[in-house]
Image (cartoon, rainbow, N blue to C red; front, side, top):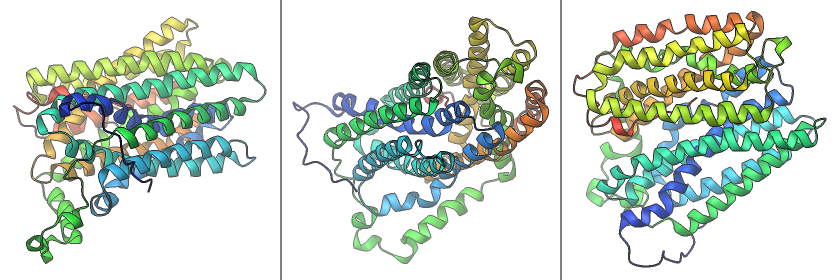
Length: 452
């Protein structure tokens, strides 16, 4: 692990809330950036480098796996080392992986090598998520931790816009300088992201506070707490047993796995559809145009939808808002049916259609976040929420794996019609779940969206 710096204190004896402005925004920007690189930027890169839609969808869907299984190794982060050290170490490791990604692009076997590096980066990013969220709760008093939830979400989304917007536009501009060798543009792009992430890691090594309670669980146990029933293995098993003993667990799992069944297929083919030539059924956009339309305007609309969803849920509650959320996340998918059949040439019209669909997704995804929060309530809330996010990632991974092959067999228009048919399970599982009529009225402000 990278050693903690001896640390120069931030000037002045300031409150935890004031000091938090030095590290919370950058910490959650650092949490979001590797995720968007692995799940979104990689799809753009592979499409520009000539990889088929079938292979893109199949192999990049496997990259969800570390987020699926991260609850299995989350106890290691608790048991060994401080959350601060895990956070800083993981950021240095992600920076090294980004540099390795740039180097791997120069190999004739770049596809296999870059997938391997991306999978390792996903593993490091998932570990960083565990440590980062745990550190946040330890470093801030409860009142300040609650107050900064919106800041966390905002800078996480800013990382999305930077990754799939600014850096994709940057790669597109570099491609124009050497149109016969697009790989060179992506080498420079990932080198730039690696440099940025190394700077973030150095910053956090210096600026992150050292909470008194940030100690390994094993070191923090008192002698009277070290009973057989409190062993790490027993505690680990009890987390899963208590989660799966919930009533109507079958309905919970169906909701977690199928609410985004259509979206899981759609998201893997959006970028290829935008980049493919019109003769092949796509819209023929350039890399930079995709960065502007989907990565920037779309991400802003996604954020706006999530914020509005949180506001309305906090006022009316999840139960009253549920069917509006369900319609909002699924019905705007028809925009892709229209785009694929009409293939409009106006960049403004294309951008508006993408923004509409992203806004609906951000708005409707609020229901998913709030439902996970609701069913995670209790003594083991953090661990149960982590399990929910694992099922969330699995629900995106499995449908996405076959989406590329299905699209190549059906063509874009018929594939997007299939996506609309695939929204039916989302409506069915929403009808099956039981929701507390009051839930969400005081918790909705923290809800937000991230695509994928």
